[in-house]
Image (cartoon, rainbow, N blue to C red; front, side, top):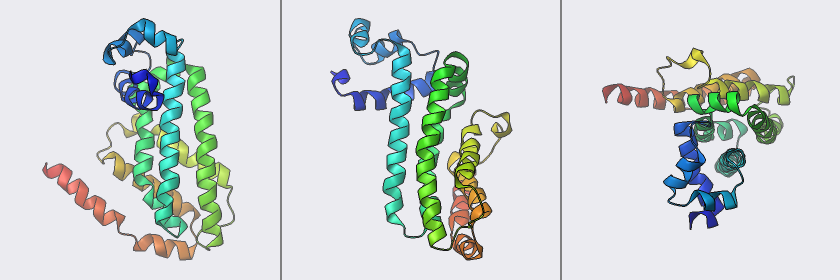
Length: 215
């Protein structure tokens, strides 16, 4: 039975919440989707609020773990940040328009707890990167790393919840990368700027965007 493996269950449940919305997806829908009785579902989870919290925690933990693993592939702090663009893209998927709006409206406490949890875990990831970048002489010393982490997290959270991005023509990966570059340009030293300018991500995304238009 799928419920016997909670990790697998939550991974398969997350896309359903993102697709249908935090409020719209019911326990009946979940039971039907996984071919189990509603009674069996309630034996494992007392209510949908519990499931929402577990799904959000599961997705966040998976993204953070992926970020931590991905950074081992690069040596300098700037490259580590750019390596994470795909992980940031996955992170923003938990902020789908319908899902996040329903979460805010109908489950404000769950949303609040999720944002606090997200901020705490992401702060560790970003601060570790900043500490490394400063040791390498690539990042400035005169900024508050925790405050700047909040700045970039707010940008990522706004992609699908702000009307400012509704007409954004770039694909999500490109948007995530541009946000990381925007953040890095604010904190890099002259040496760091030179490394950033040598990276080839812009050319790659110009090719990707051209392919999207042609298709």
